[in-house]
Amino acid sequence: MSKKKLALIATKGTLDWAYPPFILASTAAALDYEVQIFFTFYGLQLLKKDMNLKVSPLGNPGMPMPMGMDSWMPNIVTALPGMEAMMSSMMKSKMKSKGVASVAELRDLCLEAEVRLIACQMTVDLFDMQQSEFIDGIDYAGAATFFEFAGESDISLFI
Figure 1 (cartoon, rainbow, N blue to C red):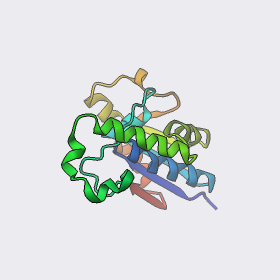
Figure 2: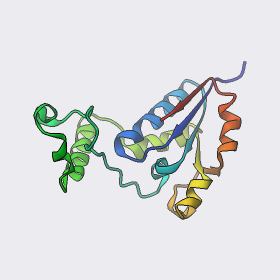
Figure 3: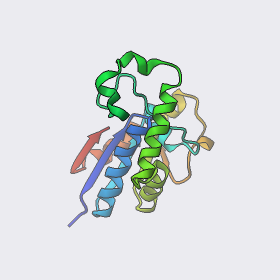
């Protein structure tokens, strides 16, 4: 019997959107799935050596805020200078206090579990990125290469 397959497309490059592809991929790999993640557009930030990921509270009404701020603070306040940095710092602190693995740790776990991490070559070229900006152990390919795998996958998710 062949392994089950999971195909993920990661398009977001923020702290809160970094977790789903790596958590799902590492979990599936632990369950003996063959897994590939195709990183395109802003998702490429998750493959960089220097990840300076932030979370944006602006336009994110589902984000729980400390001290019940989400119930009384107008959304426009989240656009003030410094709010993104403050909220990012608070989120990182909260995750650390709860023992949540960092994005880098989850990414390393995926590499150890032989999850294939694919950087979209078209997007790398579009944004004039250099391969030296990215971690080792990833592949560079186009959508057609990923579709060969995704077309045979048991589960395909767009994140």
